[in-house]
Image (cartoon, rainbow, N blue to C red; front, side, top):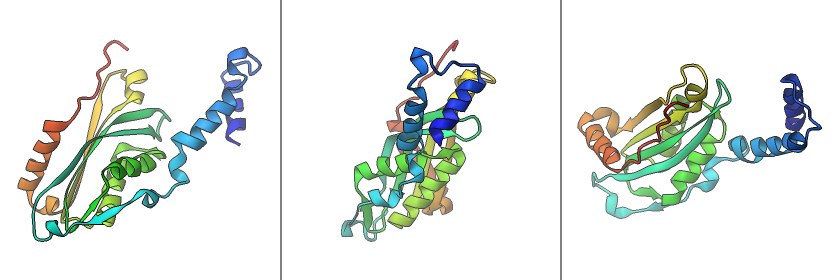
Length: 194
């Protein structure tokens, strides 16, 4: 079905499907959408979760920060990509998650048509449920190609933040967590004169 839609789209913009460069495009685009860009519709992020009980965190207030998690998604408004990094800071309540699992969970949730605001909340809700932390902060920074290649044609970024638990109640914890994120984050690229 996706292949047929791609064919119809190419015809609608006046392309010749028998042209050398386009002959296999409908198949390539269908595979790309179903196996990569929209694969999150077919996978449960819980399949990638592996948590560990860590008694040492019982009664403690230390942070765990996982920063610079690559994040790529497709904006539902223009079907154009946005990409950047997600940063997670949490206060464990006796449970931690395998380090690489953060990237896997975010990849599943972002492999759906999204808006950044919703994606940030979905990541926070999922991690909050899985980890039951005392507090959780999720920061997502992304460059949106819909602003870069159309409309205003500017290299603008968006930052979204989701707070759970102690981070909602104690603003000094938010400031400390944001300092941790700020000191470790990789800057997003800037495109001039695109």
